Image (tube, rainbow, N blue to C red; front, side):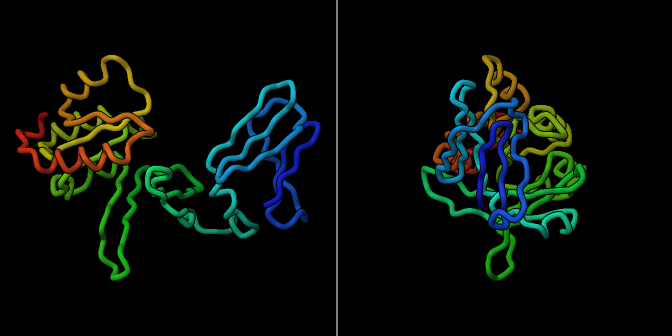
Length: 211
């Protein structure tokens, strides 16, 4: 992957400089004076108009000329997960907005070991009450996390629920508890806390899914 800063923008090339593509995104019209790549983060300096960081360019490194001709869904190869540094992440691209989505993680024998569903898919799933614990993001594209919890409780889903959020406010704990959430965790420091909370939620007796 090659990068080039110009007087009026920023560009990248995935074919050794044969073709170049704009990566200016929402940058103002400024000169790019310096470029630094640190692991999966890209940093540029403008020497007068601040500096900018584009985090997680891992998917960009897998881009190529055949990408546009792929199917409607493209699954990126996962990066190495490093404890206390970078959690395991599943990244994908869809050409059109998806109404719902489900991702299954399988082991080498083909056995499903983990399932991830969008909020809409979870509401319509016949197995929504069979999980040991549900981890729900407060901010989702198609449905608010707390609204999803409320709707699940109305469907008599008693499974323990953990809410994760990067947008806390002073009332989030009270709102979550009222909706039937067992624990609220803040991003990005989730790794150890999330595992502990899931274990506690599974071991703790539940009363209709209420904390």
